[in-house]
Length: 58
Image 1 (cartoon, one colour):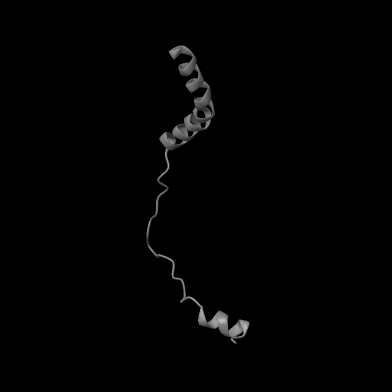
Image 2 (cartoon, rainbow, N blue to C red; image 1 turned 90 degrees about the vertical axis):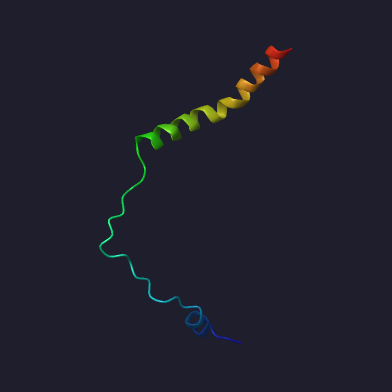
């Protein structure tokens, strides 16, 4: 049976090297923010709208 230390050494990942000299830019924009707000407001209202269509179809 392997001890905890031996297991840690066995599963040890190689050194993680961060990217140097890379200019990573945030891909979010005002469009993403507006889309998220619209979805957060409209998604809970969908059952009510479907109910209206059900009542109006009869």
